[in-house]
Image 1 (cartoon, rainbow, N blue to C red):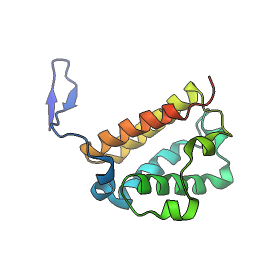
Image 2 (spheres, rainbow, N blue to C red):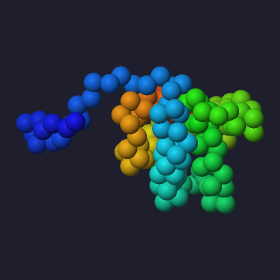
Image 3 (cartoon, rainbow, N blue to C red):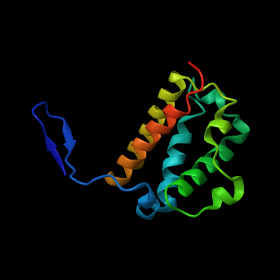
Image 4 (cartoon, one colour):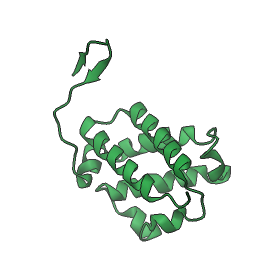
Length: 142
């Protein structure tokens, strides 16, 4: 549902609470995560901050790892754990400079991907909160 406010901007009026994290996979399935992560990684190669962090010859691998992690994390099959073990996010990101600028750019690209993917509102809301929190947690340089 959309409504016009006095400045003519359309706003979504939703009265649904965010989904619990464990129910996201049931809501959007593997296809939702596939579309979201693909939309994110389409932006990465040309990005001046994040692009250099991703080796061009492993972009597909990075995409598969993020997709697998998100599927596992949000209630889907546990293939990521079977293949890679515990996520150890801080350790896995330690080799990279994750400062406030990198965090903010990652969030910007992920928000753009979420907008493009147009997932159900209640799943989108939960994912945005999760990404904001984890991206901040991964800052390793000031």
